[in-house]
Image (tube, rainbow, N blue to C red):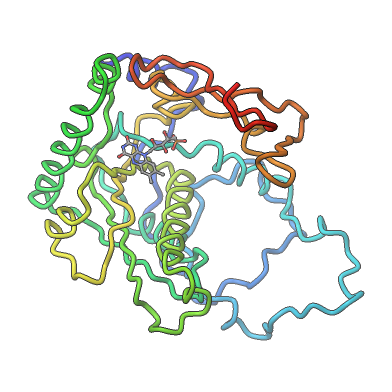
Length: 333
Ligand SMILES: Cc1cc2nc3c(=O)[nH]c(=O)nc-3n(C[C@H](O)[C@H](O)[C@H](O)COP(=O)(O)O)c2cc1C
């Protein structure tokens, strides 16, 4: 058992996750379309219990009766912005999910994922924003062991390629890391992007074709967050030569693979990124990426702009401050 694994089992992880057996049985989808707006009048329970969630049918708001586009009418929006906030408990729950989402590679359980849970998670993914509403994604749910073994072999090969290019100490540290859980989870989800979806005139894509892939990444993030709320771990694997992966999955040429995800129930969620817990990398404080206008005149909310940002030494792998450029000369200080 690795050191990581020991950490993950510690009480730091908070309350134990429900075992898959405690997940609710599949329920029929509600017959009526969901209301277009959440009803803020009723305070939600402090902790939304996933066990009570029923599968929700996705009904685009534009099809809900009586809905029309909100118009920008000058002077009409007199209410303060907070008037449209969700109830405080819901806001807390959202931030809790965002903060508690983790990339998981260790501690997966073999238990199957209930169909209704998977449907909710994919529904959330499918509600992502997309350029010109092109929804360029497809979700391939991969359970077949033989296919996953092929994919696993590809990932192993790329890990070797990566390790071979690392300096000694870093290569040794990499050997202790687990970077995929392809065969450990009951299923994998391949998220693809069709850059041609919607034809030639997709609104917003003409000058930046890459926004189709960005849209698909938004779907992945929705999936990841919904999975966390449902108690499912997700591990994103990118140790692939994309053409090899596409060939191994038999994908048509017009589909790009954006994400390969290992999804399953877990023993626990790490309290911080696994790479941070293992010492491989560190999280940057919020103040560092926050700027007022330009990177040259970087400011941050707390006024604690860093003089340097750390980066691991490529040879030793140790964390050292990176020298910043002097604004006047452009030379390194
Ligand atoms: C595009 C993308 C590709 C990733 N590929 C891998 C991967 O191949 N193997 C791995 O162990 N983690 C992978 N990760 C997970 C990151 O290492 C992880 O998100 C990061 O360390 C932060 O941890 P957290 O997601 O738990 O907050 C990937 C994440 C992203 C967004």
